[in-house]
Length: 195
Image 1: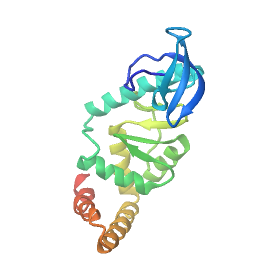
Image 2: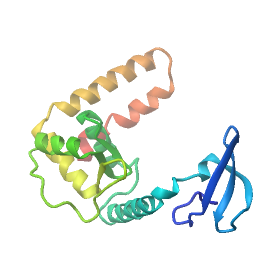
Image 3: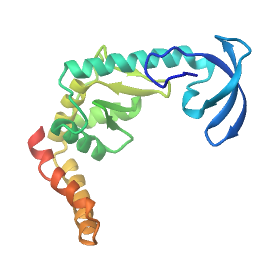
C-alpha cells in the first residue's frame, strides 16, 4: 500500500484483514510498524506484495517514457497533434490506443498495425516497454511516425471514422444535447491540419 497516492511514494507491506465498508479496509502492517492495525482506503492498496518489484519497475519505465515523450515534443492531451493521433489510433481498432502521448497495445496488435502501415519492426526505442499485462508502450516520436505512415498507407480509414463520429455528434446536437456542439466545433479543424 501507499499512504499517499503519488508516484515514488514508498510502498508499505500490509496484510488485508477485512473489507469494512465501501472503500475502507482493515489492514495489519508487516513493514514498517509490524503489528499496527488500522483502516485504509481502496485507492491506497496498490499491488499484491509478490508483484511489488514488477510494479515498481513498470512505474519507473512509465516515468522514463513520460520524460522521453516530453523531450520529443509531446505537450498535453489536448494539443492538436495529440488529438489527431488520438483520432488515428481510435480508428485503427484492434485494441490499440493512444494514451498520454504513447501508443499502447498487445504485441500482436502493434505488429499488425505496423504491417498495415508498412513499417518494418526494428529495434524498439529505449523508452518503449512491455507492462505486466503484456501491453507494449511506444513513445510519442514512434507514435507520430506510425500515425503518419498509417494514414499514408490507409488514407480512407481515419477520415471515415472521424466523419462517422461527426455525423453522430451532429445528430445528437440536433436532439438538444448542447454540450456536443462544443465538441463538434473543437474537433472540426484538428485532424487535417495537425499532422
